Length: 220
Image 1 (cartoon, one colour):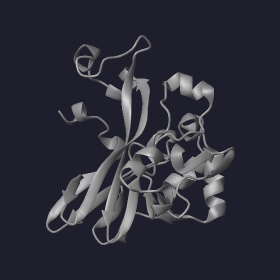
Image 2 (cartoon, one colour):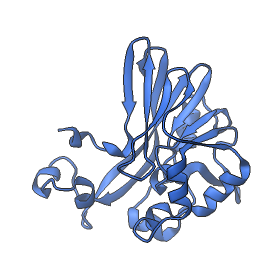
Image 3 (spheres, rainbow, N blue to C red):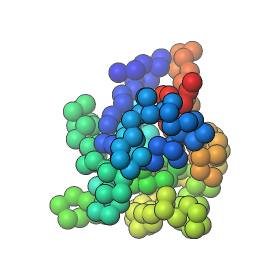
């Protein structure tokens, strides 16, 4: 557990997938990054789907959801995606999916928001049925009608429709405080409606940056 003042945080695995090493590392030469992140025969590197669970003010809050379990066999093969482990790993911490009060979505790319909907016993439903999903309005608009360049990253429109029909979402513009000490802040950049999460309590401050800084090696 990581403590930020009164905020209690746990990193919970939702599984893993693989992305193209060159695309992820950008201008960094492969001769350098492959020493830290070994690529497979398709030049893919393993990417962890780590979700942050925050306990604050009597609420259980998740940041992002991972890929989920509804991806097609084709997509699973392309990205060598593992099974969806988030629900099981939350249970190991004593948290049921019905216990989640908020889901903050840093953005709506499929590897972060694909897990908002799950397939259980042949039925498609919200993974966290009692949670309010916090999304930047700009990101929602882009995800609902992506252009050709971004369409592959937002390939789960049916899931967004289910979320929309449920009413279990809140679109925000810019900064929004969920509970004391937990605020989303609009950044854009990685996606048009990207948001980060500011965590502040008892003089301690941290940011959850999501895909703005996805890998430890990219800090250096």
